[in-house]
Length: 322
Image (cartoon, rainbow, N blue to C red; front, side):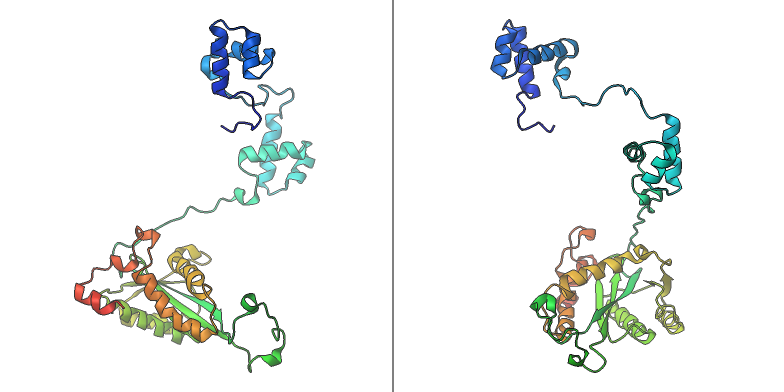
């Protein structure tokens, strides 16, 4: 309970004062010792006689009965208009109720915000039982750079001058990521583009990487990017014996494990430290990926590193671990 910092009595103090009065102590004396007026002491004594110890607890200052409560028809009308996506001020004008009344009604109905009118779908979490049952692929674009940016150095000199940049600008590089659904074991690489040729080359490299750990891939999930819906990517999946599953349009949570891995990579690798150029950042990627797979605790798998979910022989473990 949140007691006022200047409160003279707490429920324990009230009970102590009441007990003194019931044992024969004068009301005036008990009130004086408690630091309250005689009227307050008599109030708590009367409550105790009627309700016992429960009557000594704090009560809401809200009245038990309102003189002019909002009619149920008005409440129903307010909710009906809200479901038609009208604003609070608009509803108040149409119903004749005050904006404060409309706000209270909408709060009780759980419709204070517009997004409450259409609650989001519940999260559908899933996980395949065995490593290799499904891998998730995705791509993240990063800008190339030849020196730390102004957010690190504080120097904006030449930032808006096209002549200070190389011919055609620095351009982009693309982080291709792959994460196993069951173990969260990840494979990453950087390519100059996100075209179908790069996506296919990355898929072949990812399958080979997992095969080196004794994992056979059977399914691959991607979004609906142009490289993933190409005939070349489909033919490669067929050649590798993979079933290609594409996420539903505009639902990135379906491919959420790859999305979440990208956020982790951004926070712990790409923007975690100051790189002198993008080449240095790319050189650090394999080291960070190794740390993620072999050393970093993962909350989704009981704070174990992803490699802990792979059944490996001791000789393979020593050969692969750096």
